[in-house]
Amino acid sequence: MQNLSDELLVETYYKARELNLSDDFLYLVLKEMELRAIYDKKIDL
Image (tube, rainbow, N blue to C red; front, side, top):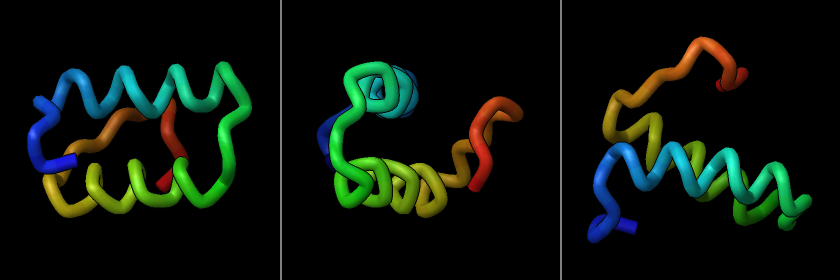
């Protein structure tokens, strides 16, 4: 995930939710967002 830009990481999160991907994958994306200090008001961290 380190190769993804911040913007692409956020897009990945929303698309994963839309596609009902596994909670484990969503968790990994959210943890990476936390590491990068990326916060979106629509996302409950």
